[in-house]
Amino acid sequence: MKSSVENIDPTRVKLSVEAPYAELKPSIDAAYKEIAKQVSIPGFRRGKVPARIIDQRVGRPAVLQEAVNNSLDDLYRKAIDEHELRPLGSPEVEVTAIPGLDGTEEGDLTFTIEVDVRPEIELPAYDTLSVEVDTFEVSDEDVEKELTDLRSRFGTLKTVDRPAQKDDFVTLDLTATVDGEEVDSASDISYQVGAGTMLEGMDEALDGLSAEEETSFESTLAGGEHAGRAGLVAITLKAVKERELPEADDDFAQLASEFDTIDELKADLREQAAKQKEFDQGVQARDKVLELLIEKLDVPVPAKLVEDEVHRHLEQENRLEDDEHRAEVTAETEKTLRTQFVLDAVVEAENVDVSQPELIEYIISAAQQYGMNPNEFAQALDSNNQVPAIVSEVARRKALAEVLAGAKVVDADGSTVDMTAFTTAPGEDEEDSEEVEAAVESTDAEAGSDSGEKADSEEKAEKKAPAKKAAPKKSAKKDDAEADAEDAPKKKAPAKKAAAKKPAAKKAAAKKDEKADSDSE
Image (cartoon, rainbow, N blue to C red; front, side, top):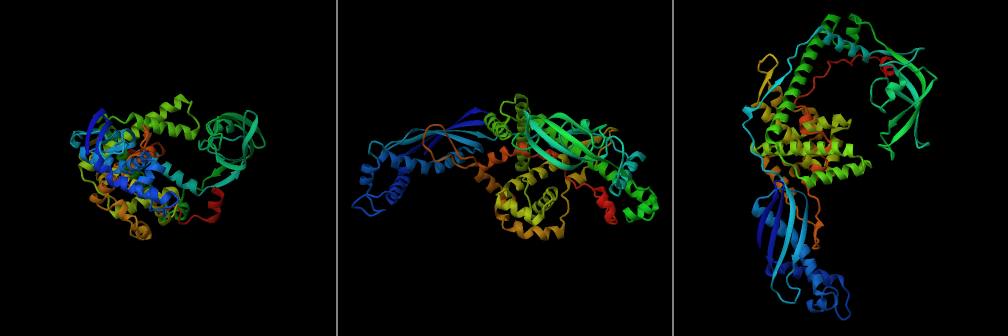
């Protein structure tokens, strides 16, 4: 087999392949045997039909077509290996010549393949990256905010006879119509005014509305078959409640924490506020370092891959004609792909691998975000073949930590900021790890707990052959690399994931009584 490669642009190549008839011979023989099993010809047992009879009844072109289709996978992989390419997305194959159509055993199979590839990235020295983050200090106002938040968790709701205002809790009925036709309704909805978690315009409509009053507003529907369409939303306010907070005294400190006095509780809240500010500072540093790295590299992204993903995304939302939204999705897709390419380059450069404890720690964290049992979450990942994608995500997070460890981070005062907490892998939670270890054990071979296994897994995914169709310009099956890219808009870029755990409140809810909890809800 002979092959050559032509660079169409920095992220797309064209492979030209020539394979002699002799290389197709095993596939042709296999095609005759397969067709012999499928056809029924009088005088011959199924599976024992001679090749010349198949040529007469079925046609030699059909046999050769089957043989070519069965050969494309291996020929494509050989060409990819020969030129050390890392393909992405859906290859497009065009067969230009098929040997043996004239009955001879001569000639070459020739075809071309166009496919997107990962761009070549030359990483800068990490110590050339320098970013500035905010200086943090804990003020009395920060402590009061923490205390107020804690008191809110133990507050009770009391019905009030006045118009609704920000932070009030309301009960309401809702009806949505499109072009005068009711498309959705709900009753007895509980909502906190100002939360911004429901329809756009609802907070403004509720502000100043009293119980038993009605109003309506225009909004873009967020769910159902009419998602994305403008509709008229009518609401009926049924009740207004405000939260009453307990007094901030020693009794409250004993109720809400392990401390005996309010002063001790405030001291602990100050410490927690400091940890949170340090955490936020680390997140800011990490995001700025990644942003600077991407800016320095200006990595190209495959135009066709972006276009296909944007079209799929808009088609799912039924918003193909929304040019403004198309521009937003395009920008987000390009950013996500560019981030993945850069971090994958760091993974390769630093030989980053993912251990089983690191994989387990990530699964536990993700399961908590989804409100799922870690064991069940791990099994769901395995059944949906998502473990390799999770391994890649963990590797990218570790790669970003490597970059952050080498970069220079200073605060607004010019003082160097210690990023150790963000560049050191967190400890493994033994109890939770035991819970999911059995679930991920069977997937460990596929995910790869060392760099060799992971590299082999990703290499196979990237070299997946084109679809077995010898017709001109047929799209090939999508490989795993593109599947990961296609999911990109639906998940945040690695830059948005924290490298350290957010500090949890100390036993704040340990002594909450059932009544307070019920009323707060």
